[in-house]
Length: 231
Image 1 (cartoon, rainbow, N blue to C red):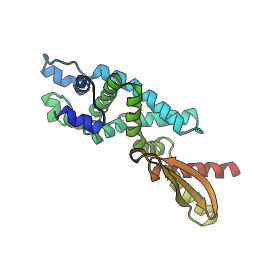
Image 2: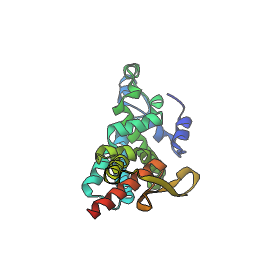
Image 3: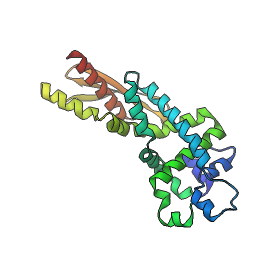
Image 4: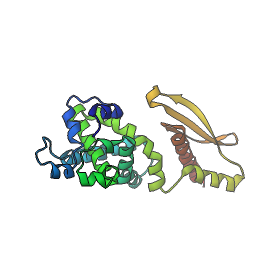
């Protein structure tokens, strides 16, 4: 297992009680082979982290999208908190090299298994909450979930909004919509981009996001709503 300080640096969080973070990394397979280990498994922290993750994801989506339905919000939340998404975040944070795994689990590549990575990420979330409170865990989770939002939108809303808009505009007017960055704000570590999409001289929609791609997708989504309302 790699050093806990290294993991704290990856997470961007200094734990007052690093033992909580250590416990979030203990898989039950390790305890089966090391019954005298001084910590229990990460399963209770995983339970807590799962609940916190669901709440923060719901709040994040409710705040970000003021004009989509409850069903769409539910679908997006499911996409953000599903095993594959959490495992991808865990892989990005390199949680696998920090896990306490049994020898058999380790030998079979358990540190890269989606379910183990996703569960460990939830346990880390629980540990952050207990150590640093809701505001810190909220900031941490939004940083991790925001890059996954575009993928979740395509998965659960079934749309790549830019492609859909382009097909519609080209079909109607035989021109291609153009995207322009209207504003860039926020601190260096949390930039927010505002992008407008226009057809000729007409602006059909504006969108905001943590990167240009997200802002363009949101602008395209709003443009599609504008056009739909005119039909």
